[in-house]
Image (cartoon, rainbow, N blue to C red; front, side, top):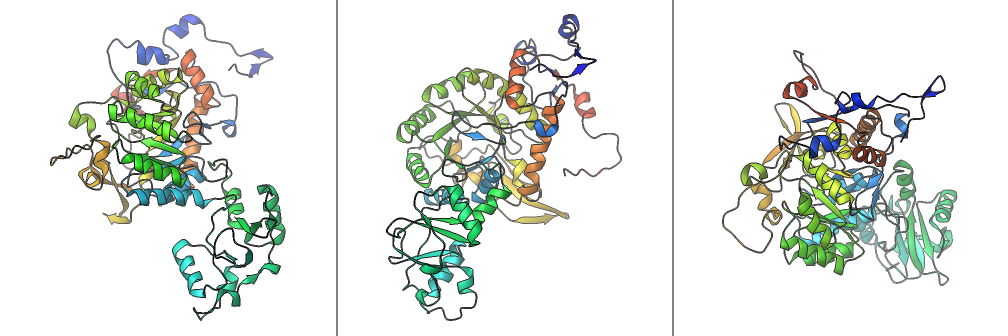
Length: 524
């Protein structure tokens, strides 16, 4: 994209070809990663991007992207399916902010499906399956539902079920001063004649206007026979206001993914996840080019064609080729480069991540398949490099593990607030089911070979503050590189206008904090 900047009415000059070819302005991706006589693979720290001309403001930088062929995100961030990173709480906040969370599979089938359902129900447009009670139920039933589900607005129908004739509703106001748990609901509910309702067929926008005008907490939607067909909550209006970039499906529900393995019983897991409403399934394997994964991807596309499938992990185009042929909608790139992963050390197989992302992304692009750079992310600079090497999204584990939304409790060590973080290849995670990521068939063995470690990460606070920091950091990086969007970054990557250099160890040291006796590093 040519710059609109002019000087005295004249377009900006271009550097002459001799200077450009000399390497004075850096080198193209092809020169760095392909024409590579030393046969060296590069990590994110090994490469640095050259600055470009800035002709736009930071607020104009567009980081929207594609996770898969069919799923678009406002922010290219994905939380990893690890049992110390992503359950429903993390997935909800990731989706609210414009990314997506992938629920880990170290859970029973029922538990994982329940986590997915929790995310899908969090931010509803029309709630089509609300908990209902009948007039003959008691206050004790109301208290139980509030304690178990957190719901305070409960529709009352003649059958006590969805689809019954609407008779009233229970709200916090109705139960605030109740002391007798045996009193029947019909004695204290808000009756039908006092309710504001909407007719079946009403649009979400129209229903929202009714809620605003009525100043009620819940708006029942009824058909011509006055039977309850849906419910709309005022809190969802507030969530829409607080999270305008939320990742949502056609029903205005949050997007969520879930991981499965490649064993035969994972087909049952996939069916349960489909029933729960999962939007994307990640086939979770440390080495994705296996007969087990190819069969699983084909099964998923045949049995659940409405669900996108991300396959992997891969680090070469030859691996990617087979999974694309099997029908994968996205690819997960990375092997042995996570902070808690020891696959390269233990198994002697893997690849440096910047090279892996560049080569797989370039090949997958020919087939219209987005790639997900998984692992090795330690900063917003690494995220920017991954995206500019061709990745559509980045998957993060350790970057998100210390947030309030990650599973687990905080603890203190030497005065520092920490949270547990472990690789899915650690013995602790393997003993809870994580081994299926590293042993793909049903073979049982008494010897487990750990491909990860357990550790702790420092408290990062809530994702509500941390996520905007990540977004702004990436926007600054793209702006400095002179690109206004990810599409423009990829266009410049492949036409040679986005330039890189390889950094020596001394240059890497110089590029970080140095020369100080002591310092305090605050992210935001």
